[in-house]
Length: 343
Image (cartoon, rainbow, N blue to C red; front, side, top):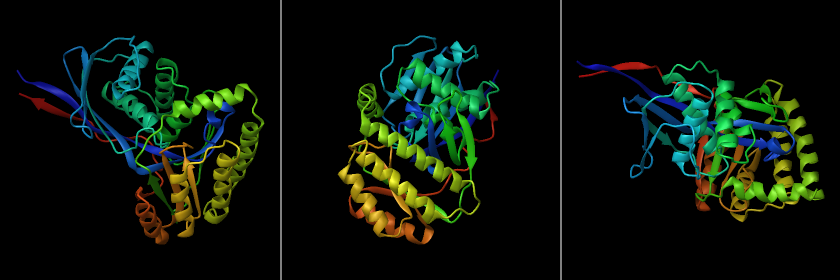
């Protein structure tokens, strides 16, 4: 006899930019984020009778992984480790997870400051939620993804990434509580986003470890960064509560936040700085690093659609990878579940 195989063609989760508050989510709480269309992680699932998980990376065709389903694994920082951590986290939370084949596609830069690992974990949880009918809402999916990274794998992350990409849109997240305080803010259809990517990555852990050492020493410069950035976050938040907010007014404060990263955190990335300068010279309302890495990583510019091509071309001329995108008002996207008959 044949069998019915349940397939999800595509669960898709966006990346995010940090408008203001890099690292403040795990230091003291408040951040402002924006989920971005076009840069996304997608996961599809096919059921398997074997008690294992196989993974096919469609954007990395030469790499395939497989492991047996369990609740305890030893973790590195490879893609398969994130898959294992999600499976283990869900099983430890008493969700029934069985054999499956995962088909993964992503165009997010790894360790580039756009929440690639957060997007990946959320997409994995969301796909398993739909496939195994776990009944999780988007906030619970974000929580499970956070547990998988923070507690299961031991990564020193905050809650920003998982909630930003799960819920989408412009968000104010106060991560001083768990779950965080969440406020959805207004989009502005006149504003588009240019992402400038160096094509080089730097793991968050390298940034986070240094900041934690400075916090332990009560570094006055880092404390000043926190105070000034939190004040800026509240000013931007207030502006984004108004429909049709003024992008130049918002942009001026975001530009200030970028300067705070350089002055008080002491992070100055010459390549990113060249992209930012070019974006501002070509009419961007603002341009800022996303993720605040001293090497590699990404930046973003908020701009009008009319100026987006000039900004994109200016970044490409400097050797960067640039693309125009918009706010992803919806975070997790589910395509329709369907059944396939296997003879």
